[in-house]
Amino acid sequence: MNREELRTKICGLLKQIAPDTEPEALKDNDKIRDVLGIDSFDALQFIVALDEHLGVDVPEKDYAKTDTLEHLLNYLGEKIH
Image: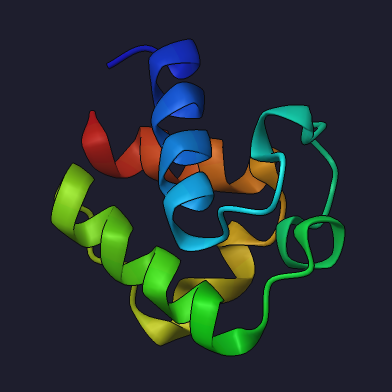
């Protein structure tokens, strides 16, 4: 999966978790939770969705590595390849 496909998948999962948001408008350095107004429960649902849909388990110690879209893309890119 290339970076653009991964970005599209992430946006789709975020949209499922928070349907009233516009994740496709996220810029690389935007803090995902802050910009989309996602609470901690929704953030956890998103982490679970990443595991279910992409097969990437994100341990709690790595949550900070997924705070921005850029960080998340880098983190997932390392885990998927």
